[in-house]
Image (cartoon, rainbow, N blue to C red; front, top):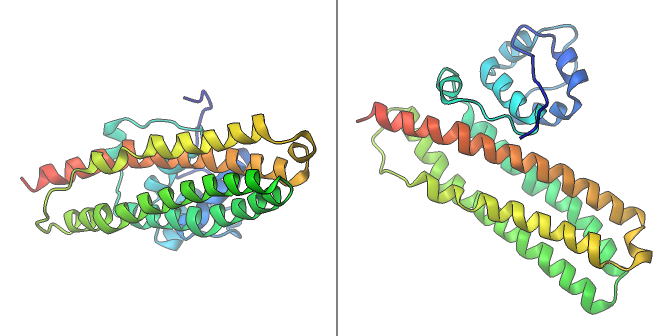
Length: 233
């Protein structure tokens, strides 16, 4: 895990936190937050938008450090009523923004390769893209309604939540495989083109984001669900 530190809390100025950790700007839409908050604190900005500041800070800590793993006590002391909304918006970000953007770069790269090689590259990416969408869809149709039901105190059939997280490593590994293909096997004249360098940067960015997303699900969502289940026993 990263050795980066995250020292901000709900009393910190939002502008200071984003200046120190610029990548957190990408999290704002997932919480329904926007820029233009002046000198307000994190807590003030969140309160104005109806966002739980402690959950926002917890998530920011995971992303800002590149994968800080919160302990169970920290997770269970944080209100997570907005967890499902946050996760759904994250899925939308990957599927409707990140993947189409990378797909555009991949298409340009493929057009510069011999036809067979270009088709193989696009096919590899399309399979990965389909697997990611399928993974997200399963969570949205099964896990998210289950969490909402538990939060509302409704009796719900038990879901094996760990089984739905087993695919995280596979998704991350295939992204790494795609990078290795680009690193090792593209012809020199294609490998040094702007589209290739751009797609490498984008994949690295999205890969890191997905890693943090997986930590939110594995180390925040899972303990929370297990705790909610225990409250209904």
